[in-house]
Structure formats: structure tokens, C-alpha cells
Amino acid sequence: MGKTKQKKIKWWQLSLIGIGCIIGTGYFLGSSIAIKQGGPSVLLAFILAAAGTYIVFDSLARLTAEHPVEGSFRTYAKKAFGHWAGFSNGWVYWSSEMLIMGSQLTALGIFSQFWFPNVPLWVLACIYGGLGLIVILTGVSGFEKFENIFAVVKVAAIVMFIIIAVLAVTGVLNGHKEAASFSLGYSGFFPNGLIGFWTALIFAFYAFGGIEVMGIMANELKEPKEAPKAGKVMLFSLAFVYILSLGLALYLVPWDRFSTDESPFILALDKYHISFVPHVFNGALIIAGFSTMVASLFAITTILVSLSKDGDAPAFFSKVSKRNMPYRALGMTTCGLILSIVVSLLLPEKIYEYFTTAAGLMLLYTWLFILLSFRKLMEPSGVQAVIRYIGIFLILLAVTGTLFHNTSRPGFFVSVGFLAVIGLVTLAMRKKWKKPDNEGSLFR
Image (cartoon, rainbow, N blue to C red; front, top):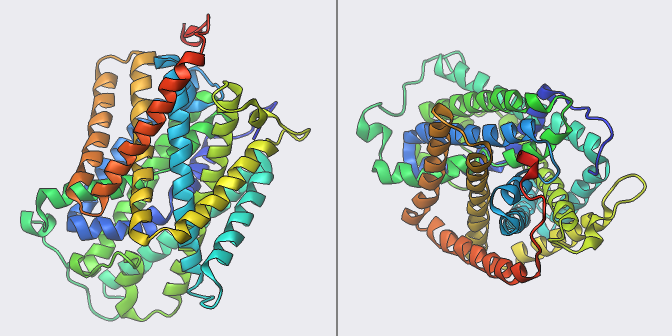
């Protein structure tokens, strides 16, 4: 997790890491919420979310290719807009990932109780938290290998669903072809109108969360200039399997039968009574949640070290061991992990849901800053400039859609509250900062 003497990752390995970091419960489970809100129009929502995600990662990858530095997006924000931007970006991201980790660990515990109903939730959450820390202790190479394995397992689960669903649609599975459960007319495709589609967009974006970890890992590439290619291959592949699998699920089951408490893929195959499907997908949910949780652990520890080196966190956290492992920063991450487990288990369910929604929105605010930093530092023109504006528009569209969703709306205001607190701390810190003489020299 510290500096490496030699960059060892190839572009296709970064693509695999991206798949490992991104495919999580936001897709395997959260897509059900998107379906309940938007119906079949969720397919369009995922296409737009994929486009927006690609624009963000392409911007971050191009910055990395031209100027590979530690700190990734927060360093670029600092160079683009000043110390306040690097400080606030780092702590917004750190806070959001900490909150999200609590929900990931709770979800992992709930999924595991499918097999171990008598084991307390907090015990299961602690076990997964401990396993996640063990993965991080293996270093960058270990993290990369584990995420590659997780990626293969998760893609295999999706491919398995696609194959079984195709067999069901074509009549091979039960002897007769299935009819489509929805029509392509306006009322069939947008059963809850454009507002329903608008509110579903945020959940489609959540299914692509994790690209910022790819941005951090892109600095480990043998050839940093291949970062955009890694993102393009990864996101196009991911968008294809996401949309195909969701399309098949919607083809087999009417949209209003999906439940926010059950994976759409388990429900879609439920009537075929395939005994191993619930177990396979429960395993996929656990692997998906665990791998994204590990990615969060890696990212927030790396960001904390970067903040510490820049004087935006105590210098104590930038110290590393002889093995180049930032144990002190990892200790802080461990404390945050324990706190997130306690908070997730003690807070009332609705209140905690508001916090995790807010955390997801704060992640999108980080994405927005990536696009603004790219615009300031790279000064794109023509088509490239238009593409960045489209990315900004899509993110704002997803964020504002939460105002029309009863559950998401409080989360929006909680996220604004977090931004306000971090903003006030940033204002207080500005008095202590000295403007560096070489600010902006990296991009000259």
C-alpha cells in the first residue's frame, strides 16, 4: 500500500480489479430497488449510469496517464482548485466509505444468516471485518490477487444466471417459451412515468460505485497511459452483462413482483425450482459484498496516508513499517470499521438507511469533482469538453432524482449536512495553511 519500486499491474489486471471492486450488493440486491421505482425503464437508467461512470473514470484515467501521482482524485482536486479542495475531497470520500462499510458488513451478516441463522449478526460482521483486514495486510499485490479472484467468481455467477435465463426464455428449461412480461410502449416501459425513471437512476449509479479505487490502483500500472483502455474494456463489459441480466430478469417476471428485500435474479428463477440457485446467489452476494468492502478498506487507508502526507491529517498516519505497510493508518481504519459496525447495529433501521444513502451521494459528489478537476487541469475542447458536461449533467440528474423518492430524500439532506460540516472544518483549517510556492507546477 506504500510506494512500489516497480509497477507490476497490466491494463487487463486493472480491468479485473475494477470488476472486483464494482460488482457488489448495489447490483445483486440494489437493482431490485431500481426496478421497483422505474420498472423496465431501469434498463435505460443502467445505460445512462454506465455512460456517466465511463466519463468519470476516463477523466480520472487521463489525468493519471498524464500525471501519475499519489492521492489520485484528491491530489488533482488540490492542484485544480487549491488546498481546500484536496482537503475536503479526501475527507468527504473517507467519511462516505466509512459509512458505506457499516452497511456492507451488516448486509454480509444478514446474507450469512441464510446458512447460519443462530449466529449473532455482530459476530458475523466482525468476522468479515477481520478477514477484510487480513486481505489488506497482504499489500497491494495481495489485494490485487484477491480482487481478481472475486471478479471471476462474481462474473461466473452472472453468466450462470444468463445461461439459465436464456434456457427458460427459449423453452429448453420447462418445455415452453416464456412470453415477455412487459411491452415496449411508454406505459409498459415507464410504468411509474418519467419521475419513477428519474428516482431509479441513483440506484443504477450505485451499482457502478468503486471506480475511484481503480483510479488509485491505476498508479500501479506498468504503463499508466493504458489506464483509459482498462476502464473502457471493464465498463463496456460490465454494462453489457448488467443490462443483459436485468433484461432477462424483467422478461421472466413482471416488474411489480420484484421485492426490495430479495435479489431480482433469485426471484426470476424462483418458479423453476432449481434448488442450487438460492445458495449460489447467496454465495455471490456474500463475495460481492465482501470484495467491495475490502476495496473500501484499501481506498480509505490509502487516502488517509495521502491526507497525512499533505498535512491534512496527523503526520502519525503517514508512517510505514519496514515492509512499507501503513499500520498506523490501518489502525485508524480498524477503529472506524468497529465504529461503523456498532453504529449500523445500534441505529434504528430507517435512520441508518438515511446515512448510507447520504454516503452514496457523497461518493457521487467526489465523482463530480473529478470531472471539474479534469476540466480545469486538462482544459478539454470540442467533443471532449461536451462529453465532460454530459457526465456532469448525468450525475446531477441522479442526485436530484433522490428528491422525488421518499426513502432517498432524507439521505440527500443528510449528505448536504455532512458537506456543511466538512465545509466548516475546511474554513477553520484555511487559516493554518500556507500556499505552496510551486502550486500547479505539476501541470505546467
